[in-house]
View (cartoon, rainbow, N blue to C red):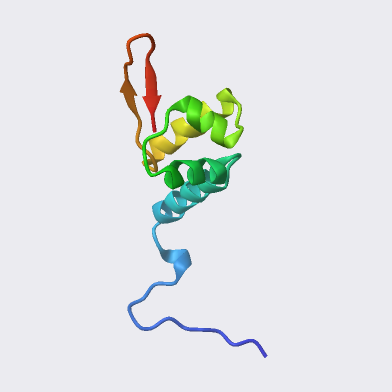
Amino acid sequence: MVAYWDPPDGVRPIDERPKMLHETGGSFLDSLTGTHAIPMFYALFSAQRPLRFIELEAATGTSPNVLSGRLRAFVEAGLVTSRSVRPEHYRARIY
């Protein structure tokens, strides 16, 4: 016998909730489960300080192309922030 749960009065079933909620949650989960995402988040949050691109690359073993694409997606999703720093001889970003 299968039991069905009826939501209380006034509570809409999940399939009637706004589509945007599902899209936002889906894109967030895609960001978290993408290639190298977990090692990147681990490196970023366990360091407890801003990391330079090259430090993040060394910590995760991720190729520069993949790393820059994933970081761009994280910044666009609002999961991490990025800012530019300028030492004397080169320009760098920290995350």
